[in-house]
Image (cartoon, rainbow, N blue to C red; front, top):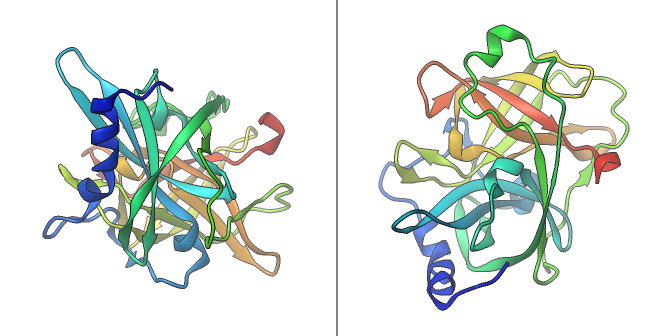
Length: 245
């Protein structure tokens, strides 16, 4: 992932660009991230620099630390051949500088043909794949969240963290409870947010299960089902599938 001087300058400004503007939100509703929450301690904002026909743009998503130097996110957050990518961690709801650069990206497919047709017609993002980002250095002082490797049953509740966009503004880190309503044989989960709306920039946000086995990554938010983009109350979750990695 070659890094030009212009791209580097934009990358260094990534954390500043994520500082919340007045009234900016990620998840609409939900709860502001708590500093000691294992979910929010491991959650990141993912920024990629992409070159268009006449400008360099910054795309923002969410992700989660799953080992000291690996972040799980949605594949469409790093589609194409970005000029550069970086992640930013949070202290509670607020981003913390400096950003950590991404050294390599690997993408993995998730079968989506079993998603019921009534949902497919309202998907606001059609990529249901996942991606692993390898950071340029291991992260210290943050505890990764383990992957749920052998899900025996679907939890009654899941929890999502997202640092996406509300309207055109950069968001801050928030969490929302999710209630699963359908699961496909390939592991895609369709869930409804409880008292919240999830926005497109929350793509890649970690979805966790919490129980006697501790906190585990169930998957990542990969699509919002809505008639009024960029936000909706129904989310498609791509499974965290180590067998594909």
